[in-house]
Image (cartoon, rainbow, N blue to C red; front, side):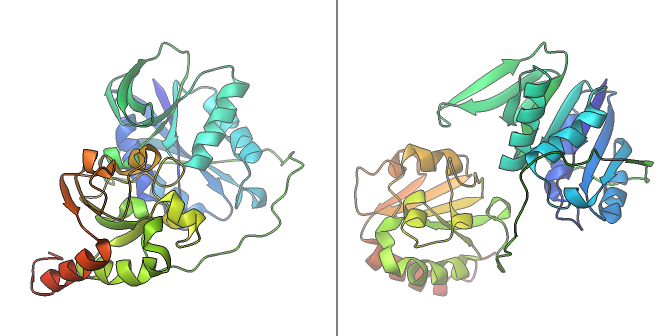
Length: 316
């Protein structure tokens, strides 16, 4: 049994999602696990991957056009080393899901996306119907292709370094090209890594950040937003939680003025604790909330801040 894991990294550091996906790969006992690192001048990333416990070998595809690869280039590079693998997997994100889907289509194979658990080899659990149902998928395909939700798996540890095998990436054949990349400066961690999230809806209006920032600071939280708030330009796109945004599973999700449309629930319903403040007692968010307060948020949030100011354990 051979497993190929596509590594996620930022060009310098291996992402923790790769360590978690490696744990998922261990669902196949005695499997040989290899890691593919694609990028440009990413030798240090490959060295980190080679030290992951359980990895037998690292493939390193280093080329200028892989620095910020297009789907066509990544899937072509993946095909170089994936042919002999029984399982091809990657941490779930939009780009990897699209790249693996392209590879699967070229091989005339199916794909299982956003796997939550692997209770047995070739058996996968995933959410369906906008998160309302849990589906068990059993595959008999000649090659299994899947992405896994990293937050559902514990990160693998490190061990002795294993061999790194350089490979020549195929030349880019796509007619598309990247014109420019604009970096957005932010001090905040990624939403999927946040332990506490304070999320707001469109009803906050221009008071979106003035209301949420003090509360987030008091709780040591990250700020999220609904699609409505993002489409209204109250918050940037990288704050969006939901079906077309980021899916999160924090210890605490505090929904402020969030109605709770099903598309938003898909992205946060697996939070360990959900608390909501909304003046509409019929708001769908209350159907999944562990704690709910029917109140005007512009009155309730200042009261909550005052209470937190006297609670020294709030950020503990």
